[in-house]
Length: 370
Image (cartoon, rainbow, N blue to C red; front, side, top):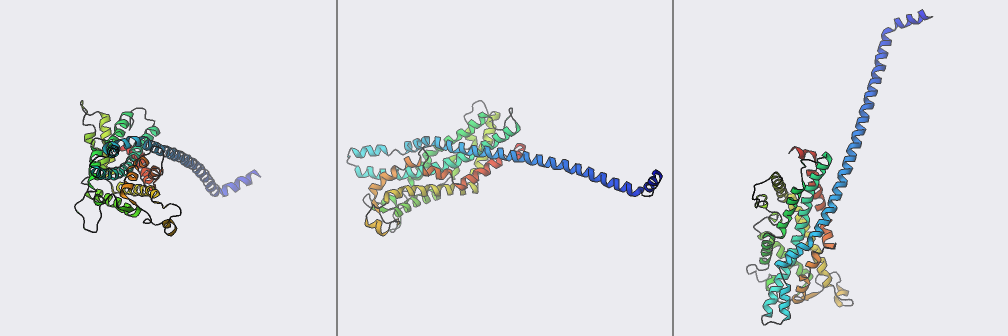
């Protein structure tokens, strides 16, 4: 029996060899595929964990941005009020001076100017801090991911120098120049007879909310069309000027700060950023008008409320009554407690999307190669 089996094997030797090769190959390929599948699953899990960690870090960074904006608003408000002090004019009016009409005219211009300045400055603060903190956040993520305890991309000294550049929005001539630019807006060359400008409006003349909106729109158009500088000039100093007072030469950290400032200025001058800033300004002025509308609501039972409750021209107020309302808007715009105005700016979808793009750029590993 053994000989017959052996004879069978000898007669079909090639088939057995072929079958053995096939089975062995399938086994090896199976093991190889199993190994690769395990590596793939491990890489997928690692990538998922990295993405989750990155997303968590990004969301945490956005909360930091929001809290930083709120903490900066009192300083912003103080800077605006110092430049446009209407309280001194109000105190003079209470003394019933002989030049009462002249003081009222000054109060009219200052009230509108400081409200418009407050809107511009708050919008700029929101978008600038969103950019800067996401630049820093991206670098910190890379440092943490690489375990960089030595030679980090953004050491604390660089972070401090870089983020302190926000002071250029509040001082160093930026606020002075911005205020001066806006104060010129209500005093253009003589307009055509059919055009009414704020400077020519009598204190006794009544304005509807729609007419007030037109005045604000005209001021904004004049400011943005007549400015000789880009909006980024008001938000960020030139990198060379930022550390110009370094008496002992530029250190490695100083050079890193200058690089960050230059990269940030490039972003601020980009069309995408200008689109985001414009959308933020649109939302800011819209929110301002929403708040002003509360003062133009007709009283219950009034004929205007029964015939045209939603009309922007249903109620008109004398300019003398509108001035104190406009003058007090800075307390609403620059409120350190979350208000609808600030919340709308912080939650603006275009701002959030741009922030995500900035974070994505500066937290990508390829930045390490630059």
